[in-house]
Image (cartoon, rainbow, N blue to C red; front, top):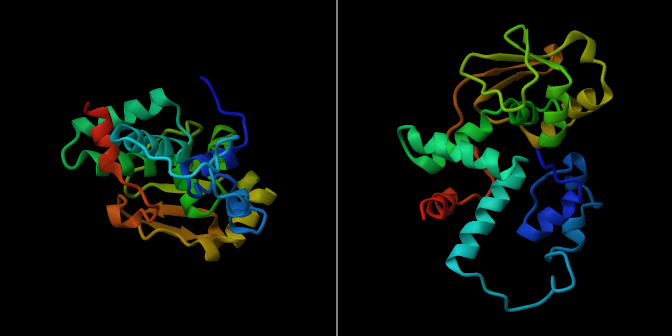
Length: 209
């Protein structure tokens, strides 16, 4: 699968908002977006540029896709699944993305970013209900208990992330037991739990054409 290996700060600048792809760095003075909050490239500072309706919808899809670190094929599969479910397609899509285990360990505060979450899940640092899970797209369910493996609890990245969790906060649908290195899925996330400025209806309109 193709993987983006360039500067992720360019992605934030392209989407004109912080996507928090580099963890703690995004909260510091070193954040590239704060220093250069215009699109990358030689025409990035050009003024008066207008997008068509299609362009606006495309940018919204690209923003969410990059936020969760998915390929186009993966993202489209998530959309098709959400479209088949009951309820509002856009909300279903975001809930499914939030339920990915690489996102869950990030939201719970075990790692600094979703990229780190994906890396640590693949390297068997987490267990779900006592069983090893190393598939980043694994969907957590209500009642699931996700914990850091005993041997991984001394990993500096994990301990440092848990120390900083008070500043970032934990969503209401997750119950974190900091000292026990585990978190429980209390419920599925509600739309109001997603605080990032996402207009999911634009994505639905784009894929419905």
